[in-house]
Image 1 (cartoon, rainbow, N blue to C red):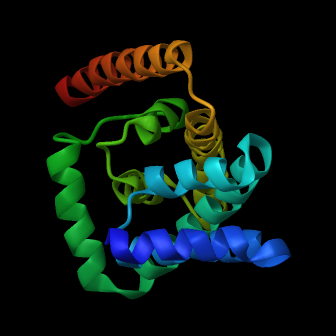
Image 2: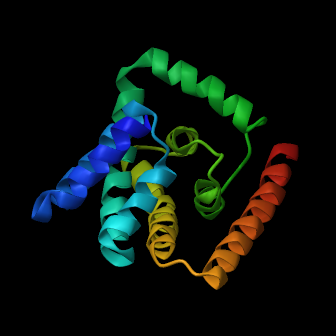
Length: 183
């Protein structure tokens, strides 16, 4: 996988003004290649910086979320497979709000599309799904892309702050997931 991703990221970095287009396209293709969202967002911060990388990652994440919605509607076997995966990840059917889902999206071990599937099932229509995905994708794009930008200039203090934040985030999300599962 690394043999494929590294040259692609170098291509995006050297593509000039078309780089953002290829980066957003890479977000869309990522789901087929099973590349973690975290890596793409980190790369966006590394290549484009915190602000532009976050914007491009957000656009790519929204495109990925929207294409996922239509894939689930038109490919029944994929829908069934993700329903089983959702049952394993979210043991019971918890009642999670969009802010809790946003925090879950920040946890690297929670599958991006499991949460999208949960939102799709809970949304009344496409518009509701897009609205909730919009809110859920903002923190992910900003946090991971900013981390990617920080990794570019990381000093020991930044590394300590990053590690502390991630540990705190995992503890908080674990408590929320434990509460959600026991409901």
